[in-house]
Image (cartoon, rainbow, N blue to C red):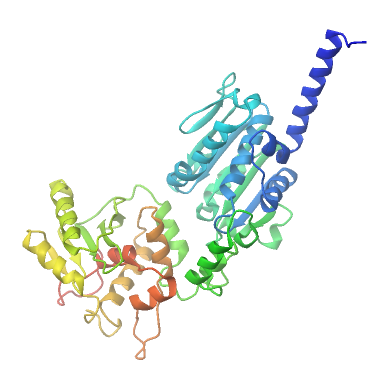
Length: 460
């Protein structure tokens, strides 16, 4: 006997209700069936432990899929928790717009219509079509100057996802944790473990194991990282280096090494916003030889301008042409009082030609004697020492540039037989890291002194 339509309908409704309950309870099945993503074991562990503990902190290596992990959590929470509010943040807006948000968009494009059709995906927020003011996900940049902007309205179902959490200040975490007052409030922190201090570092201490699910994602154990990539990183960093430990193993560094500028100082400068430019504008030009980049960087007192120019030309005169055009197109009020060029090697011809074109070129030869030669091995060492003290004392603001970040924090101080401060030679740096510190050197050049009559340390 055929089942009646009423019984069929009731059976269908029961099946749908059971399925929705299953998706609510099991984020892994939700990810597989609704998002079409099969998380690997490390990702599964992060997702399941977050829901068990409600507070999760994840130290991660490169390429482990931590951004996709965050995306799966966001869509599961938003889709299965009614009137849920999700706040997605990072120290830099570029991290959100360049990584997390595009990932959420890709998931939205391919997710099952049973949930997709309920939401509208926008540039910086996702909102429920029927409850747009109470059911949403929003992106917010974690700014040092305005930590209260991260405080969400208290909601029954609320989730904070914090990417690059190692760079978020303790004050901001206090505000965020102060918002998590309801039973169904969650926080997920993910980051490369670069800093040996701060809230994110502390969250991984054994004393905080009862508060946080302390999780780890290693590139060595990731289903998404190839053996060729691992081998490349082994050759690039060296398996015993802090860089390998952080970027590949996803572990905190054993030590700060003998890096000149600490990671924490550089990260603070990247997070810092709205510093007031002071004094004259200086440009630094590092002219690359062979396969090295040529880099033009601009600084005004404590502020490094975000428009870092990187030229990949073997023909030095093409670099000259681009710099001349950059200078000519710069408004008079933003033109530099001086352009410092390392005029050793290929830089000499570039500097001479730029001077012929009427640009305010100041030669800055890295191998020359330092002004304060009693303390510094050579001119380049002096530039880097001045730059270190600038980072330490001036509370500068620098752009979120991967090359600049990596090069600033990996340049080493090396032993000098007479005890003077000495920067690692470029060929040694290139041998160790398989790249040239062009961007950081371009910034260091802006700390060159104009004349040997200069007394004391540069403050501009």
